[in-house]
Image 1: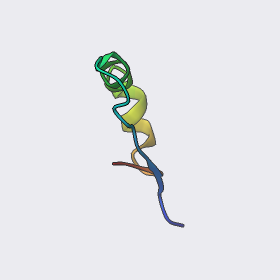
Image 2 (image 1 turned 90 degrees about the vertical axis):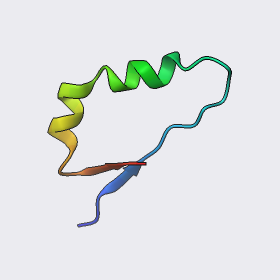
Image 3 (image 1 turned 135 degrees about the horizontal axis):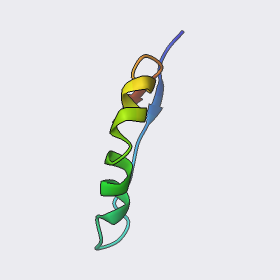
Image 4 (image 1 turned 180 degrees about the vertical axis):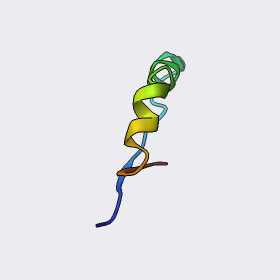
Length: 38
């Protein structure tokens, strides 16, 4: 089965959402087998 692609888009001048997403580092490692972050 193909991995699900997950992407973020910078829609404003603040990068807070991207940083918060990256703060999920331990959870993202657990999802690495099933998602592709682009």
